[in-house]
Image (cartoon, rainbow, N blue to C red; front, side):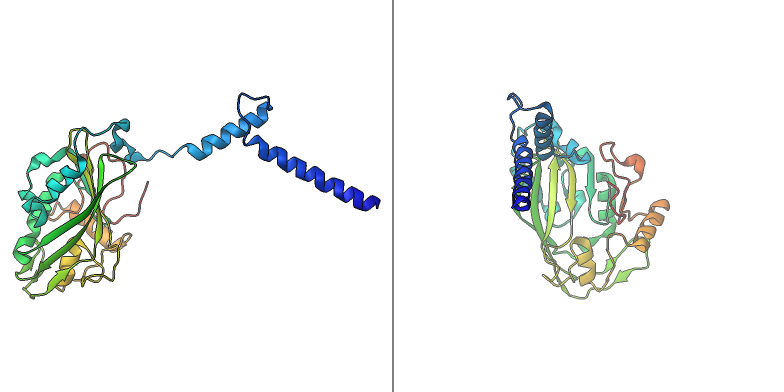
Length: 276
């Protein structure tokens, strides 16, 4: 009997201790609770409500709200003939900020000038004259009112020679139809309504379409029979891109560090793994 009574008392004491600890989490800071209990409550509240700061939060413009319709801006830009045909030189320059950066899984950071030059030197309009980027599903990022998220599906026919400047690559027309998987795209505006940052990433469903899961330019290459490894972290691809950058060749996948705007903090280039 004594042992049973002692065991019951021990359980009751433990339950009371747990109850006190649980109650401290709900203790109002202006009540008669002890200072240690109030500290626990304050610490718990801080931990669960504070979001970590990300370096790209600079593009939230200190919590400002846009005085323009970001969805209409994005739809207007993506309806430009130069946008739909991926002839970037034909898109009016006034759409873009002087501090613009593009970043994809293995391309970037690249400024607007370098991106347009590289796009022009690819001469994709000769190889795929009917190329059509098909954007849809526009939505504003609920955590950044200056950022628009949407999808694209690229369709084209390889009816011309695909040649890459300063390379021995020359692929005659195959007549192959290219239909990429759907993939995500994002467009962030500055406070003046100019596009300052664009991104794309890999396929939503890599089994969709007929480009072996590849999207954008690499999807076009795949359709032409030019199958290239575009994996993030590929050391051979990274070395080739950096050597190409060192030689200042016409086809560049990222800009020189001194030509990247100061708001961009990551030192990762091309297919390098994330460093931030």
